[in-house]
Length: 159
Image 1 (cartoon, rainbow, N blue to C red):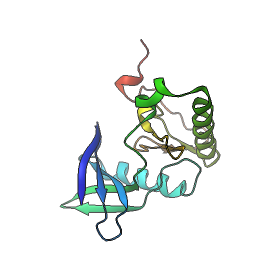
Image 2: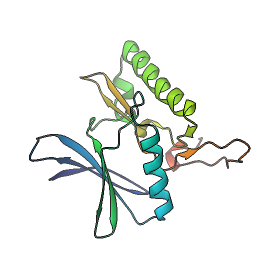
Image 3: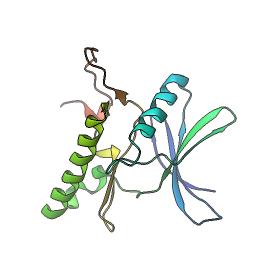
Image 4: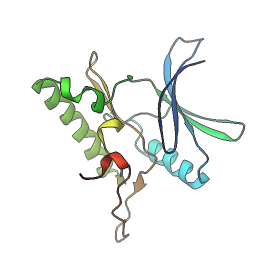
């Protein structure tokens, strides 16, 4: 059962949902119409990184009326962007360490996220949890492949 919309972006909308049988909370990313190869790549990347430290876990995929949706455990409704200015020095060190562990794991598994920014880092301050999210632009690293240097989103552009 959908609770509320908690975010949106160029490629989709994210809703908080609850499984009424188990009472577990989830985040459901409903994708806007995109090439099926892009959806498949995101699912492959998430499955490849399954169990990685501080990487969001893909729990399920749903297709409803031809619209794909990805199901994730609900972490929080706060991102690094929303809490950054209120973090203590100790919390900054903790979350930076957790983010670097996620990036290190990702790179050791030959995956490039390509859209790391504060709004793609979910934070649950009460549990000390960080999850790197939004793997829609991620790709598998291939030696000798040339990757274009592009700005993934407007908020990431230099001033």
